Length: 325
Image: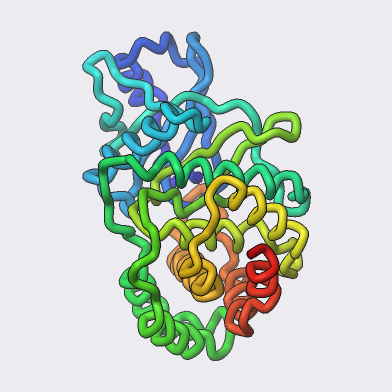
């Protein structure tokens, strides 16, 4: 989450007249995140989240995102629900941007330095439950930050990449050639979140409370979604791979949805691709940070190191996968 578009109070009051949410009390920008403009919205009827969808989000994809959230909610997975206007529309317009209000999810995210094995186990279980629930979700969406997008972002950032780290542009180009030549084709797939980072998962009193921010969701490999989760949750703040976190996450996941042999065989490769995906979007946002945006871009260096770990074979990941068979 972040703030790119500032919302004048009079425009917000006019926008709220479309809803049965009472009168505006206050609206506070949320700096955390990088994708859309987000606000804590307080009205006389309660607390909500207001999101303005910025240029990276295609308006035609919004019905998929909201339908996926509602599908998961009906399956018992805690996530925010859209608040419809009096006309029954979840997506409206504010300050020239598509905008939506969703319910506020109790709890808060766990900071990377405070991630415990118990958090990873609960996340693993939640991801498996999401993957099982997604099997009968009827809508599909092409992953807009898949391999083709990584190549496009690499082209855009190539002239700046070596300013971040000498030789980075060549490093990225070589890895992209490898991924394109070796990316799997026929793994189990369904609608997936593809952004289950610690700041998108809420806990309350140490217990899993729900998942937010579905605005990258797409149809892709279930194991690729899991690889993104592994990269986000199974490394400590010094980028050291944690066997204890990984073991807890994978065991909890597989207690509900065991991986196939093909998924196991491709896990290190999928982790490389998952690291490349985050590296490229972070590098792009680091290089092209909008002036005046109330957002702190995330350093791509973290995912350069994670990618190198997996390039070395991700030996700890491979060994643990084999041991869990």
